[in-house]
Amino acid sequence: MMTSHKATPESRVLGEFRDRLAGARLNLARTVATTDADLETLAAHESRAIAEDPATGTVGDLLSRLEGRERHQLDEIDAAQARLEAGCFGICERCRQPIPLKRLRAVPTTRCCVRCQDRSEIGD
Image (cartoon, rainbow, N blue to C red; front, side):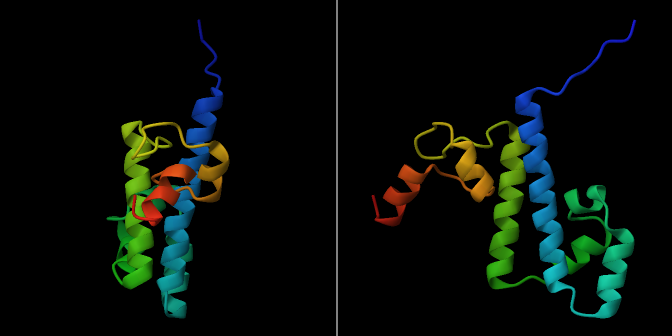
């Protein structure tokens, strides 16, 4: 007898963020693709599996060119993906309370709720 596996609201939201973070990684790769050949190669190899595995193929090669701000963005994406896989995505690192979905959708790489982020920025 086959059972139906329906996606729970939580699993749909987690899937949404997996896709958004993988897309953000791919967008960074596009940003550093400096030649038409890079862009053609990226387009030929563009897939979810490559976007999620930065050590694989073209995306990893392109992302290795990142510097400064883009490197920081990539590190934040990697950290968010790690939190997602560890089951602690969406939990504030300071107060350990859930981060509102609205904030996560606005800033998927956020580590803190608004209150804790504000306190952090004023040096509390």
